[in-house]
Length: 222
Image (cartoon, rainbow, N blue to C red; front, side, top):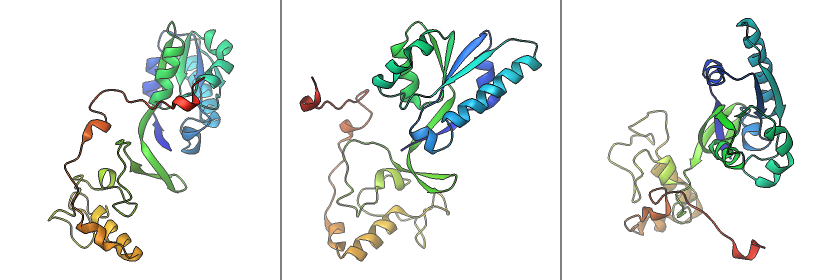
């Protein structure tokens, strides 16, 4: 899932200077799970913004909507009336949600309320870690299900560097060496011979260097 953190209250309040009404758009998927942009967080933020405005002698009406997903036009269409009537939209979605709202409502000021961090997993209550950078050419079949692009600090493709020690990364002693994890996993699976396969020079054209990427399923288009 996409993991995001809410911006500081001061930064959000400052971005709303000059507006007297705002629709706080929560998102019902990823950011709800990581407790940064769901309905609960949106309602709390809307209340705080209104209280702050009163304390400053200003007026601000904040209403909340919670589309199932901000990154899907279907759910934006369902909330079009509320969003279209907004003076300003504060998105508690990821960066994709903010941009999709801005594209859907080109005459509206759309502001981000979150900082999008990474694609990750929930390890424990309130604890998420990055697991994928969306490089567009997955090699997990060759590395035992451990990604060297994301989890190796140096993005090494053919084994560990000379700096790892006792299974830890020299960049951060609290971080497991990705290649130690890869070796241990392949050994457990009886597939250590996979490490003898030399990885060719990486073709990064599937990653971000060529501009925004897209996936089109012709069999799904009507």
